[in-house]
Image 1 (spheres, rainbow, N blue to C red):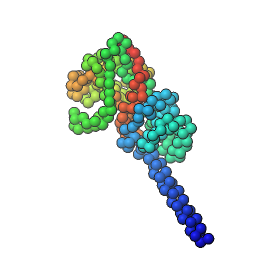
Image 2 (cartoon, rainbow, N blue to C red):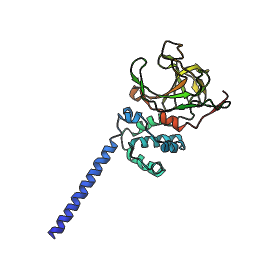
Image 3 (tube, helix red, strand yellow):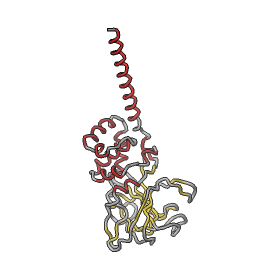
Length: 276
């Protein structure tokens, strides 16, 4: 009997230690979501995968934003994407994470990034299939004009280096918050979407008929791709024709950039057709 008691005691100690370890791990996992989460590099990088964005693409905007929010909190733990994005699993995950006091605020920032985008910013040409574009993930790549800094966006490069040829459309509904010249951005437009994301279109050659304060719809032409910037107003030709896309959030009034790459990948096939 004494031997059996020792075995039982040992088993209970191991079980208690295992439960304690699991509890500590769960607390550590949940601690990823706090007041500073949206300011971290991990969040700002918006790291996704091809499979994840293809699944997100097929979701309704509200569901997509919440699913992206949960995916980003997994911190690379997710391997079976189809299982992760099942409705039952998302609801179970939301139940766990929603216990954190900053959950609703966190989701609102993810919504500002993922919920309002509808169209790729560069339409396809109905006349010439040679007028293509390409892009890669250049967010935070080094830039040196005006001092060493990180690139706060993603460059969409034109196959035909001709300023004014490619029309640019708004990716979202929204309000034109800024229009005009910036030394580093050239002729630029900033559009605030309904969920609060700030979508920045830079190096334009010219504008469409839009002014600050105007309401635009996703797909409206807002300007034409160019190579403006890197000098006093009107400077052009300092680099190849392209569109710089930036996405910004403003937690507590602080401006932070997030990587637009995977958002652009998600809507890459959602291109309007224009006669150019």
